[in-house]
Length: 236
Length: 304
Ligand SMILES: Nc1ncnc2c1ncn2[C@@H]1O[C@H](COP(=O)(O)OP(=O)(O)OP(=O)(O)O)[C@@H](O)[C@H]1O
Ligand SMILES: [Mg+2]
Image 1 (cartoon, each protein chain N blue to C red):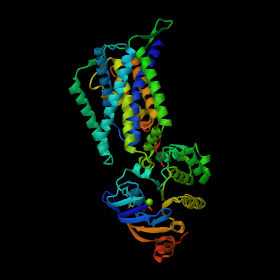
Image 2: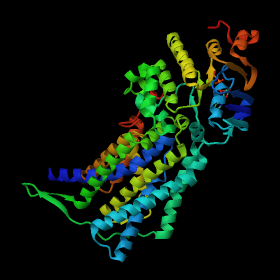
Image 3: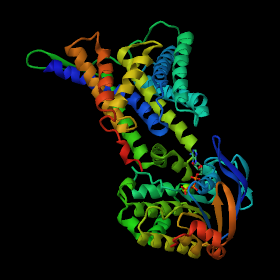
């Protein structure tokens, strides 16, 4: 459903992606792992047109989206829960969720809110609290909840476990698996926590210095000695 | 006491005009982090459109004040908004994403251009307006002092309060207002939520220009004379009001405007009317040194 072909992305003179090709099939969880600065976040952002690819092509459901404005890409169903969560700090939890519902025009608001609360009951308790005052874990839940409010077809998750207590990490990973199973939602998951990510992923890619250096099923990558040495040292 | 009350009334009316202009500075700063130096000129254009339409309506024989006022108000809002929109489109949008000072320089250029454009097309001479609204309510206290609230002042207060109420509702409750706040807090994330950021920024300029147009109309009625240069002083004062209230904060802009109007009125009433503009600049300097985030400004730390 998503095909990224030979994409190059530059920040000024820095070439953050040097010809990356990946694909995500319908209903898959695909993990992207790699060291700091490998270009993982840049890849997710480029898919959303922020920044735009300098060359290469991105197709979604057979349609070329490389040069579409970000709001059109989002309306087609590619929604990102970005690195650092980027909750609107001076908006309430409820308003943050409303912002997530922008692409649907709020048509299924009640229904979608209930589904988010079913996944993250904590958000319902914090509904009128300002986003900036939530704990890191709560912000992550809100970040994923906000993305789900858009009714995505493909969810891009950037480091959902970053800076969060292990108990919450498990809860969030369970939520990711649940969303994927129950709704058949395709997920592209970027993670530092390579072990956890590869365990739940159908397939994965290893990114290093802006290039894909390995790809395979989650199981293959977990077993790959080089991947183990580079990214799973001290695993778990 | 009566004298004090009179200055208070004058200060409030003046402050509301400054507040309306200040909102335009504050909103634009809030959303794209730039000071739109051409905003004072947008206000000046609002004043010119008002005077031109009053003259036009006079020629058409429409002289019943309420009707003339409504028509001029609509014309001023529509035409001035168009200027606001155009300025953003041609002078700022192409520079988005370039180095930080570029739009600022462009704004100063725009400001000079608009001043010159009005000077050339409308002439450099002061333009007077035949009084449209006259009279007021006069109170006399025991010692024989009188306090007058002119109908123009009443109009300024009523119109401003109504506009502020509507505007506050838009910002707090509508999808457009939410999109605007989202853009102000995190432009990139707003885009990732599916907000058309360029359109939201355009609308911000349009709303700011519409409010400045109303201020321009009211100032024209209040002072009775305008020229192509009025945007400069009014712009600096409104900018001061925005900084004083906390730039980026909309209630702050209104509050800053009120404080500035009151200070100016009392300064002219009790110290020196020739140096009334000094008051505004003094405040700007003091605020920038001692209270850089303003009264209602958001401290930066809350940014996640
Ligand atoms: N806005 C930017 N301007 C300039 N360079 C950038 C920008 N964002 C990222 N880079 C550079 O691009 C490269 C890839 O960064 P990216 O954020 O995609 O890495 P990452 O794999 O997500 O890393 P991490 O695991 O630390 O999140 C890095 O060298 C980084 O310094
Ligand atoms: Mg990253």
